[in-house]
Image 1 (cartoon, rainbow, N blue to C red):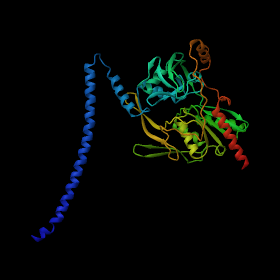
Image 2: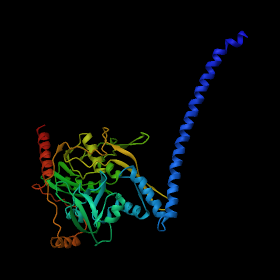
Image 3: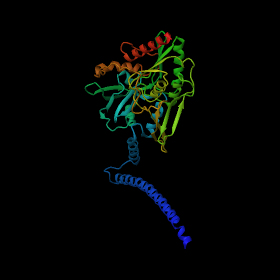
Image 4: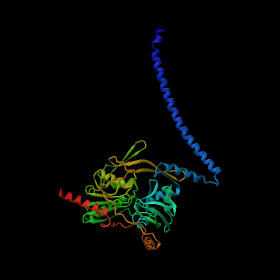
Length: 424
């Protein structure tokens, strides 16, 4: 008996520990099952609502239409950049990054839940009509854009070449909203324009990070170098971004090999680094001034953030747009697609850009201009001009140092940098 009682306290401790472990395991299992039960309960509610609509709505319903609508609603609840695309919208989306597409020549996004112009593309109908970055599109052909998705807006703005569309614009510092009537066109983007802005300063404008912009930029660098360029002003204003691969390739022209250009962080805090792959030896040492504004977004911000973090460029202009999240397009079984935000971009020094933007080293606001005239009499000559020149294929960049105060500031800064370098 003494032998049995001697082990009784040890047995009690063991049983207590086993009971605690069992209780914890049961508690966790209950939580898991509860979570699953909640999810299935929500799915039951969805199925119930679908059944009621199909059987009680006043008119017969298209099953695909309401299912597509439900998926659109789910994506819209996540963030402004996640979206469901029906097969037609998905095809249009994939065509856009190839550098040729139909429409007005504006890149749009959602800002504070309002349809907003990120940037007009140079020499397009929207650009020639005076549409600006930050303009809010409150109506399309007289219909409100409240609660519209980006993809639905794109579908409404695009159409057959030569047809008209009217957007109602609200612009900061302009008292009343105003209408802008435009003629749709096939948009062919020449992504790089260049010229010499001074005896030894090359001026290069990057319009959009479409396919092979890095190849076009190499040609532009060779051209200005052959004319004696010892420094570069690179204009990213109103550049809405584009392909990540091209952002890396362009950054690589101005950075040593194997430097982090940008990195992403996903939901699981998994980090993915994107590194430079080496560029021209001459471009690695020449001074650079980058010009940015509120229309510089996405890939433009990746390039700006990288060159600014490494002290490779001085950034002049206005704060950038602040669009730096990763969207993956997932093709679904019926030809539709889900564009889903899966990660966020960070600069080499770990700065978050998304929703914040990049502050320039030298802040210079553009001159305020009055909105364009919109009565039909004044509009007709401009429409005829658009019919003659609907594309932007010229590589020559134009500039006006009197009206363009941001470019003038960039040039003054570059002359200062060059003067300091000469003194050394």
